[in-house]
Length: 64
Image (cartoon, rainbow, N blue to C red):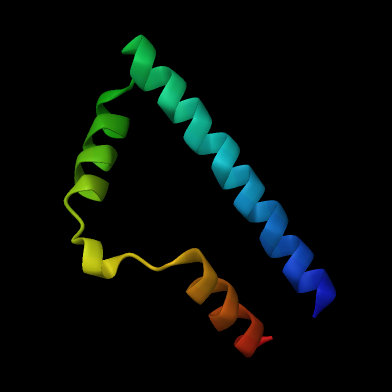
């Protein structure tokens, strides 16, 4: 269980790094057409589809 939680934490850290890279590219205006399209799709997601981080953690802990 602890190993799976550590793996999840590492994946979340990697995602944060990826998001920071995307933010930097947005500021520089260097996004590819694909990235722009993916951002557009993500921004069109209704907020009710969002999951609170604490709720996600609880859900994952319950599955482990």
